Amino acid sequence: MLIAQITDLHVVEPGARLLGEIDTNACLARCVARLQGLQPQPDLMLITGDLVNDGTPAQYTHLRALLAPLAMPLYVLPGNHDSRAPLRNAFSDHTRLPTGEDGPFLHHVVEAGPLRVIMLDTVVAGETGGRLCPERLAWLDARLSEAPHRPTLIAMHHPPFVTGIPFMDRIGLDGAEDFAALIARFPNVERITCGHVHRPVQARVGGTVAGICPSTAHQIYLTFDNGQPDAWVGEPPAFQLHLWHEAAGLLTHTVMVEERPAGRLD
Ligand SMILES: [Fe+2]
Image (cartoon, rainbow, N blue to C red; front, side):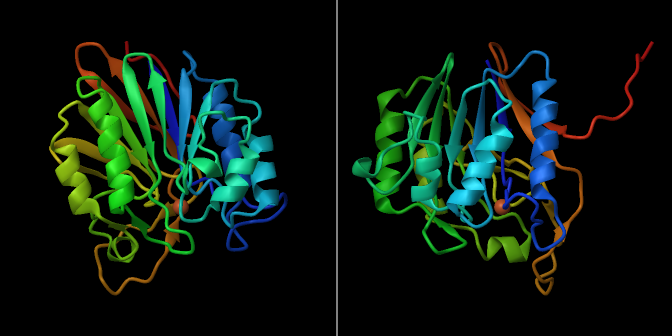
């Protein structure tokens, strides 16, 4: 089982650029081409939020057009830049996505061969930070309790740990301590994978490994200085591949979108 993850695409209207300068649409097109060239092809792909930048129907329409070349099944979660209703409308063919009648959140579960993937919605409409309220934690507890021995990957937009980057930690996740206490009860949680921070960071959460996937577009400027204003940086766009290995468990590789020269070592 090979799972691709892309995150923080920040797609804008055709011809537009994010902040007037970042061509996020072209970045996604390059990432899609890179994914198409992978051998073997991933069995499925997770997209962990900030699919578009402003949550408008037009941006979701363009997102679907940019993703159209990919043949693998896609599973999507909202980020703080998304809007749930237009997102759900744009992916109305995705029968696993809950409808409005199932409650306000876009949680769902993906059975991926030997692995179970829990897509956990951390978004608070109108806010930049995320939240795991008692209702969401109860949903997660119920899903984990259904299959306490099955290797499980939890995907979410907001990471459940601080990164040390002050301007990102100020827009972090409420409820992370309760989440960690819940995860600690389920040693079958193989990995937690997130977006939001636009750079690769790893931490231990509830006794398991949690990580952040870089963005397909711009990355977040790396600083540990509390006085540093919010800033982006043109570090290389990347995505992740999560490979299920029968003996080792889940192995996560960060892959740069741009291909560089390659040759034999011998
Ligand atoms: Fe983002």
